[in-house]
Image 1 (cartoon, rainbow, N blue to C red):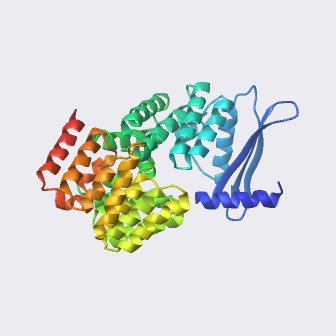
Image 2: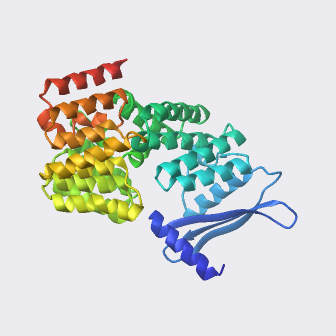
Image 3: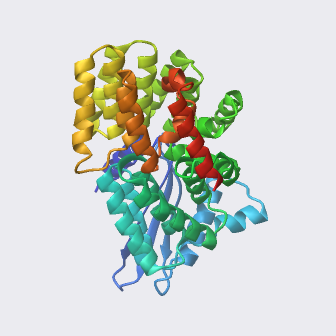
Length: 414
């Protein structure tokens, strides 16, 4: 490959990842059969090389090489760390090249953000921990894969206990892993319905940011006490370090949506989509915010466009389409969308909460609560939002609504 082709590929990768600095590399064998790592740190904007070096791997042990690469990156970026930070940054990931290769394959597969992608990632991460049971980041990645499946695509009861087990395993190896703390926080929030435990688990800013990256409404859901201004200020502080983060911009949209500031929510969701047009959360958030403003045609166009761009439509998007149809008065279309989800649930998991949303838009209380009760039985990851989503405002004085909230509170207390 020519240098210009390499530069073009790097520029494309930097654009997709929204980064200005790239670390690229390759692991290969030389003529004598020795493992060699080629690594280069470059400025994605102008292509200038900040640091480039070749590392020889002794006796198939990656640990010394990992420490050297981290030290060179720190120096190349001109970052000054104190002794504690430096020691933490240079801790080795794994001594097994095979484990590290499997982990990288898992990272690549997970970027698809689809059920197939997450299952492929889980297989790769399972291989990684079989090669090196002490590989904390691979255990952490296993937890994240199961969490994503349990939140968006498959039965929470199947995946959340595994996500909890693997996150705890990662933390037993390295208690400082922020993403593992973030994963546990989301499990406490969305599966245990336990605000206090969730708050405690993601108390550190980086753990909270990790949880937000996985589920954009985390900050708002954690701040159920009404401290939405506190949540928004917190997100703005984190955005100073990553101003184009789709997850953080989506969280600002989420905070404003729950706060009834729909025009502001729309603005932030559009910014999130500009940073990542494939984001299901940003598409979903923009669609539901447009519905609250009565802009039904625009909402439906936004939501339906997701499948055209991504090639699949997660149930959360389908359900929001059904809700928009019902809210706009197109009862026939909304019922058909609800029935399509019901039919799909016969051969794949559909969170019952999502079906309940469509019947809510149709003001069909009996079917709404029938599906909410199914959501409770399935430990729906979305059920936690009924306490604060504006969609449910008119339902909150209903005795059945209060009884459901009471059951969730009692469950969290056990």
